[in-house]
Amino acid sequence: MTIPFLKVHLLVMNSSIANKITNVEDMIIKKIRNTLEEHSDPEEKRKKIHWEKQYQEKPRIYGIPSPTVRKLSSEFFKKIKKKPKQEIIQLCNNLLESGYSEERTIAFDWAFRFRKLYEKSDFHLLESWLMKHVHGWGACDDLCTHALGAFIHQFPESIQKAREWTISENRWVRRASAVCLIYSVRRKEHLEDVLATADALLIDSDIMVQKGYGWMLKEASNHYPKEIFNYVMKNRRDMPRTALRYAIEKLSPEYKAEAMKRE
Image 1 (spheres, rainbow, N blue to C red):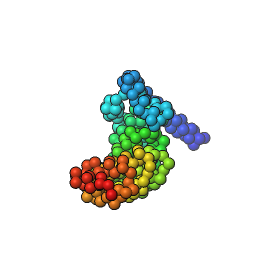
Image 2 (tube, rainbow, N blue to C red):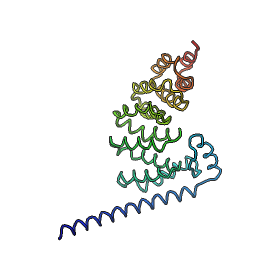
Image 3 (cartoon, helix red, strand yellow):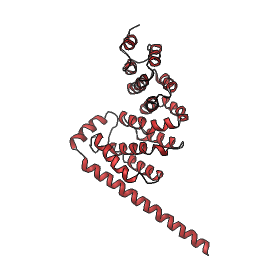
Image 4 (cartoon, rainbow, N blue to C red):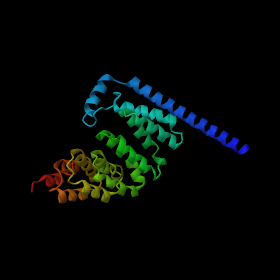
């Protein structure tokens, strides 16, 4: 009879621990939301809703300037950074599920802050966030130039998986396929992958995708001006004007003038 008793006892203990963790998570989330409510500004909310309605039918926004949100995010992270990684991820998931822009910013920021703990399997988590919680260029660029970009920098074998995003029906996923390489190319890495991704997106008709891969090429031009100039010259007949202008923005006046010449 002792074995069943031990099993029951362990189940009760595990359930108690799980409930305790959940209660702590709930308290943290509640504190964050109360703080965000306190910083909410009606005029800021009105402006942000007007802007976000371009991309979402019913955006959820507190109305807080981005610098303030990031400052609050930093302060809250200090209180949870010693927690196990999975608990932090669960907190991020809880924030993301609310649909609020500011809570999403905090979740993406925390994910970047624990980047030293990334594992290969985390690609699926970050990809799921991209697919489910990114509905505009701000969220796309935030995730891709920080958490997702840092992950790809650490695990470059994931670039091939990210390349698959270039054929997604979702404009933000296609944009992400380019923007997620900016973190690496700023560190003088993965030029070949940058050019391959630009090839895949070259004639994309969506202006937000054009701006995304044009921005990626622009960042690459800081370290590889000749290579980017040559790429633009080779493809300028097919490259949309928006992407071309972004790509050459930081090139020398001579390169820019040559690239803009009409054939």
